[in-house]
Amino acid sequence: MVVTKQISLQSKGNCDLIDITPQVAEQLAETEINNGTVTLFVAGSTAGVTTIEFESGLLSDFQSMWERNVPKNISYNHDRAWGEGNGYSHVRASLLGASLVVPFNDKRLTLGTWQQIVVVDFDNRPRSRQIIVQIMGE
Image (tube, rainbow, N blue to C red; front, side, top):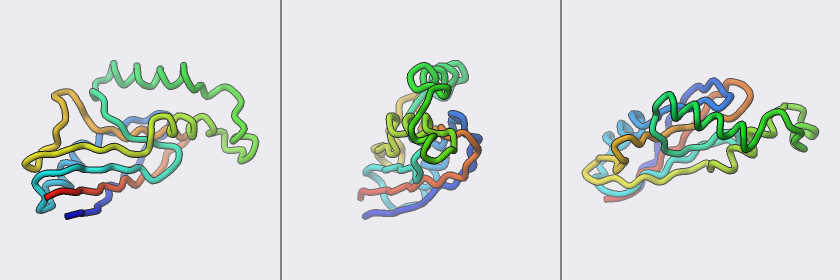
């Protein structure tokens, strides 16, 4: 069986990390599927999805890592083409990835003790985001 749902959220942009673990668990609980996988997909080219320990120090480290590796203050060809100033956000999102697969058993996500599912919005402004949640299993 396959069930497709959606999570809508508003982000602040600028490497905003949003914990969506409770929403994913709620979407899963609403189905008749007990065992399988949840695939999450962020619709958009300036955001990504991953897992992390949602702790303030680590969140700060994660945000700093992106600035060190894909800095905002260098020239991007995308910015010359479109003038939006968010070329870095496209590069960051492509490196992180737009999708994530999480297995579940007995309607429980098989995440580690300190592991949460997060959407990371790299854009240079607040955005409305849609996360597609596809639940597959038996």
